[in-house]
Amino acid sequence: MTCPAGHTVRYTPVKRAARFHDRCAGCPLRGRCTASPRGRTVVLTEHDALQRIHRAHATDPGFQALYRRHRPIVERSIAWLTRGNRRVPYRGVANNDAWLHLRAAAINLRRLLTLGLTGSDGRWALA
Image (cartoon, rainbow, N blue to C red; front, side):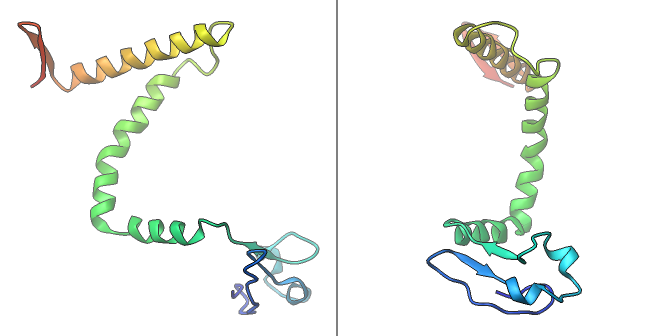
């Protein structure tokens, strides 16, 4: 691994870490790099390779267009769910679980009505 100052150290696969300890002592970029008195340590998780693949996929213009189209709807629904309801109104898990399910169902119904949900002859359809 290489730090911002250009120092390169080996990655130890057993501990999944790269340690820049002694190289950080006189480094001019230390303040931007780490606040640790022992120097910078980079630890990679077991899912690091998968995370890199997903980040590369997220730069695809097709993915970004799809994400922009659906993200506002999801964020708005979460905002509707939490607006004025940061704390649960009842005591006990069962009552609050029922309240949350009812609130989520009401928000979903409101969203479906906005999308054009209509009913006729006992059937529901989106227009």
